[in-house]
Length: 368
Ligand SMILES: [Mg+2]
Image (cartoon, rainbow, N blue to C red):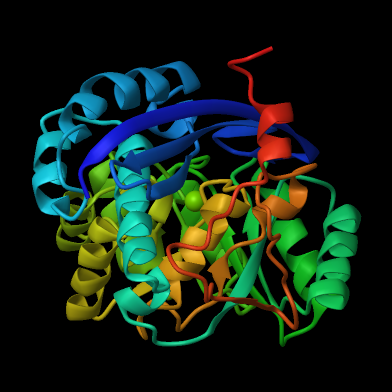
């Protein structure tokens, strides 16, 4: 299964509802579709979400590295030799979502060549994952309406609330209003995207301690190590590393140095191979993991389901799978359905990404 062609196709789809959070905002998604084709005609597909405010990658830089350095490492190599390919890609630092997509595309090729869903090749633990929906910055009444709509329409019972604004009372009051409106049975957790200092975050934890929150993700900048360690030690709920732990090595460092007590795993940045290593590390350390969302399209979301539903340890908690609902459209030929709060794992050969060619033709931005 020699790799013959590597394509990186940029495309742009507007957001139906722009997403605002402490480290940035998204008005349209401009992603790169990666297609790796073998000499015998098997096509591996993955989605690359460039996130300059998190990883420094841009649409142009993703295309450049995929069709330059990475293409040189891929062409002529057998798609089964993933470890060899990873070793070659690792010579280039950074570029996490470009590397993650290469890994997912290689798994897609493997699954399609065997006629088996990658979800089952990885482990096949469960047939569906519960969904957590992300609430971006907005007024309390608007977010309460949004949450109620998602409970009613999709059966979602878990919400991640984006916080990190000043004055702190804004988000403290918002969280309290959500809890009062939604009742005690809905799971709520916070993500500040480094918007606060450690001392501010400790204040927020104290002020919300009666609200039954389950996690607090990236409350402050983890590089401010002593403040972060103090926060982790004082918190009664797990402090989740997301952007401070974008790789296996970073995850190990943050956990071992007391910078976090839970991990977000995003297949968009660590593919399936490195995500599995992070999952094994978390399991060995006995810390919770949350399957996170890189503001993924349906292509990225189904990859998260393929991985997350494959293992017992990654399917314990609701996974962040619903950001695509904020997008006006998608390239998926067979759209994802959220029913009774769950997304089903793909049963087709490969990762489960099938592209609607007409939509790709209309949204791609490399050919006018
Ligand atoms: Mg996050």
